[in-house]
Length: 118
Image (cartoon, rainbow, N blue to C red):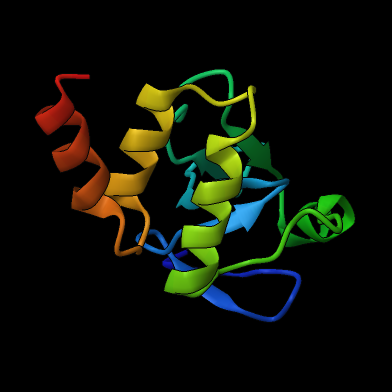
């Protein structure tokens, strides 16, 4: 499995970032007898935050209003701006996400923080 069709009809690769449950994720295929693939949070991936799925049908069932698939550069910038005002997210996490997300903010935030000694 090299690609995954999201419930909104978009097809993503393992490199694409998409919004699932109000957070940026990537998909990873699994060679596992129980699970076909997992969704991995962009920052918290590789542990208990990964979401395994036996198949696409289960993803469709869990795909809620907070899940939107891939976003444009402008939409990711808006998401980051909104997340910076949300106490659930830390500055280190958001800076790391900014470097990974397809936005114009990627290097800018880090440069400003470095200049200010933050």
